[in-house]
Structure formats: structure tokens, C-alpha cells
Image 1: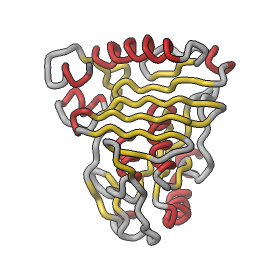
Image 2 (image 1 turned 30 degrees about the horizontal axis):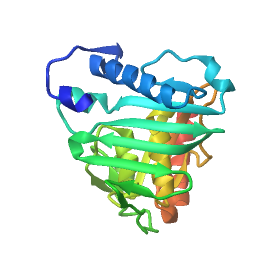
Image 3 (image 1 turned 90 degrees about the horizontal axis):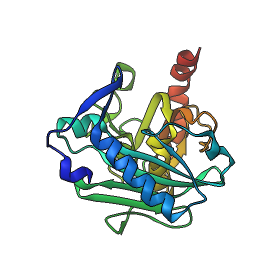
Length: 240
């Protein structure tokens, strides 16, 4: 559905300054809601494009969805977007799918299985030294010039998947983010052997009353502690 309307004329606007949305986001959201809730009628629902219903907090299982993660790239006709779907059970992702048709990529993972891209098993890299680590960014800040910038899709989920497939070594965000941005992607990364936490190194939890976390940090296991140590001062300063 999303691919058929990519690079066509459709309505787009900003929910708030710097937060674009388009009619395709809403159409995909409605379709996924209908089909996924038919699969599991007992499951709750949390999506970027649906008004939150606190009823989900009483459900053991919850679908967490971003109908188009990377809307900015979608609107601009760039390929760095995907459809992100996760099933949360008892606060943790158990199924994750990222469908990126403009990149010919479908990522899948389960809590007790492998992570795959187009059916092939992916595995995180073995980097154990932070300097030189590959990071998908537009530009590196001065304090991080010892890292290596690589391609950056607009979708945070796809950037996390890059770590899972050894296309990057580290992804870190230093801001409040939403569960739907990362739920499926962090399962893909974890299943591939990556280390996953919030920006301060704490475990991530899902289907919270406030469905946010301060940042996400996904990396090869060998550099995770060093990345947390490097970023902790910036995080604490930002949080006051």
C-alpha cells in the first residue's frame, strides 16, 4: 500500500513543527489496525497515528506500530523509510517486522529465534573498540570525530537494523523517543546479537503508561559500555 503511493501526489502536513505526516501514514495505519487486531482480538494497540487508549495497559499482548517510520524520507521520495510492526508480550517484543519495500528489504525477528533480512540470517559485527565505529549519521559532532559516518536512512528503525546486519556498529539517540519507533527494530538487533538499552544503559521496556524512553543505544556488544560512558554526561546534562 505504501509503496504503490510512494513518489506520487498525496496530502502531507505537520502534526507539530518538525513532525511531518501524510495521508498514506493514516491509510496504512487503518489497514494494519484492521488486519492485526483480527489476528489477535485480545491484543491492545499502540501506534504513532492512532489516539492512545489506556485500555492497552491491561492487555498482556499489544501491537506496537509505526505505519511509516521515516515519513520525511517517504515524502521526499527517498528510500529510507519502512513499515514497523512489533508484538509486545508482558512488556517485551516477541515478534518484529520491518518492511522497507523501497530498499527491497524485509527484516524479521522473534524473541526465541534468529534475525533475518530477506530470509537470510543476520549477525551483529564483532567490533570491540569504540574509535572507528561506524555510525549512521549526517555529520559527526566534534567530540565524536574518532567515529566513522556511514549512510543514514531517515528511519531510526532501519538505522538500528544496520547494526543487526553489520552495516553499522553503533546507533544512539539523545532525546525522548517513542516505543513505536524502536519496538520491532530492537528485537531485530537483539536477535542478531546486538546490545540494546536506553541512552543511559538501562533496559528498555514496552507498553508503559508513558510510551517513551530517553534515547536508544544499540551497538556491538564489545563497545556498548564504552558508548554509554561517552554519552552519559551529555544525557545527564540534557535531562538536567
